[in-house]
Amino acid sequence: MSLMEIVRKKRMSEAVAKYLSTLVKDKRIQDKLAKFFVVIFRRLKVDPHVVAYALCLLTRIQYNKTNSLSSQNVKRYFFTAMLLAYNMLTDTPYDLPSWSIIVEESYSVDEIQLMETTYLDIIQWNTHVYNLDVSRMLYTLIGLYNQDIQPSDQVPIPPEIIKTLSLVSDASARHP
Image (cartoon, rainbow, N blue to C red; front, top):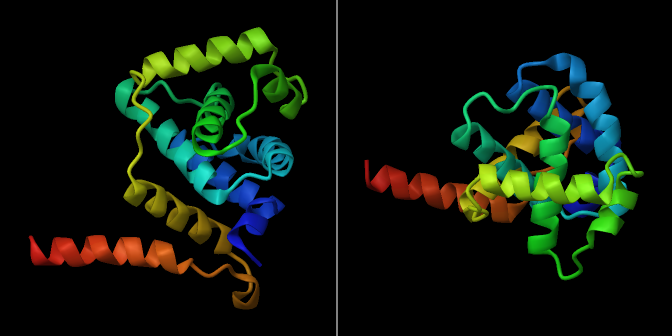
């Protein structure tokens, strides 16, 4: 099973929800987030690197605006980070009306537009994420995905992620 197929599984949505609920320190929102992510990931047929990129963008909010990420707004912020990541990294970006349909019209086109510009202002339009950070996030998500399941059902870490992470650890070992 490819990593792309894994993202469409409910378990990966649960892994992302677990990561976010830990980030905002509120386990109560985990199930609600997972249901929302299942819808988004299945409709977008999203690449796992896009999800990891979006999560890296989301963590930037914590650095740029201390304590601004909460259980009240993490769903909106993640959706906006996902919109930005998807539109930046794919060949077929969606327009705002399409995004409204993707989220089953939970947000209007005007709301999505406002969320996008507000988000970009908060992160000071800094949308660059290093490949290493994306690899680390994918590694974290796969670890959360593999928690509490049989070894035969676990997803192996893709070789390109292992290579990226080992290059960094080799470089840091040489330059303490």
